[in-house]
Amino acid sequence: MSNFHLPVLSSEGNLAFYLQEIKKFPILTAEEEYMLAKRFLEHDDTEAAHKLVTSHLRLVAKIAMGYRGYGLPITDLISEGNVGIMQAVKKFDPDKGFRLATYAMWWIRAQIQEYVLHSWSLVKIGTTAAQKKLFFNLKKLKNQLKAFNEGSLSPENAREIANRLNVKESEVSDMDHRLFSSDQSLNTKMNNESDSEWLELLVDESDTQDILFEKKDQLIRRKKLFNNALKILNDREKEIITLRKLSDKPKRLEELSKKFNISRERVRQIEEKAIEKLKNEVSKNN
Image 1 (cartoon, one colour):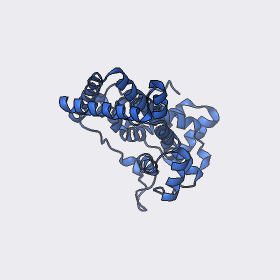
Image 2 (image 1 turned 45 degrees about the vertical axis):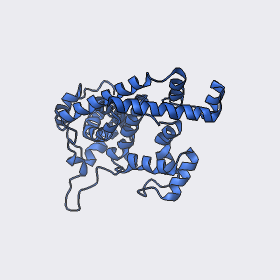
Image 3 (image 1 turned 180 degrees about the vertical axis):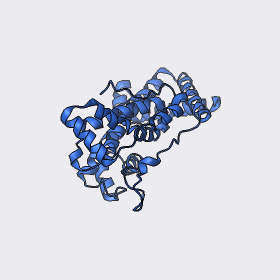
Image 4 (image 1 turned 90 degrees about the vertical axis):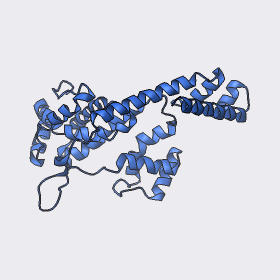
């Protein structure tokens, strides 16, 4: 399936053209989708799989747009999402009774989320190991608590998940809202009098090119300011900030206390002083 001929999104400047191209692929009826899925499942019919994938490229683009806030190229987000829809088609069982779009949303989102986590810049301070664990495990825990179809998490379920993953209840609620607030089937009928589905209304809501370039310039500038600010720290301050704030697995005060042979309180003071120096330096040059 990796050899599928799909429309190519080579650059953000090509986004509008790409979105127009993927609209040319027809949206399948439930019967068409079922027959194609059976052909692929029973006969390994790659042509059938190709039709299933291309009919959902608009769904991929729609989901990918929701992750633009992480500062990553939309080209990469959509490419990762396309990998997700291919994985979904491979594992989709049409006899389960639901549509591919409903099933595929999880695979598309999971693929994009994994890419986002592994691509975040070191300046994305605050991404702790516990938060990453929450990022990847929230859906599974909601299923275990039978809370997946209840809308927003109840305080009791949020507290249970927070305790299991050792994170704050507010972090659980925030992550739940960001990941699952729009987790409804796009194949739902618009109303009782119409056969049209919400999937048919997907439109390009991306920023215009001038806004995209402005955001990219701002991101590059912020990274440059931060990296330049790091240069004003002495070696010990820089190492403490790196290990405490910029590491995938942040060190605890106790660990750094032993490393530098100073008290935990002294480590905390050095950390606070270094952060203040960084803030002042960035503000001065902003």
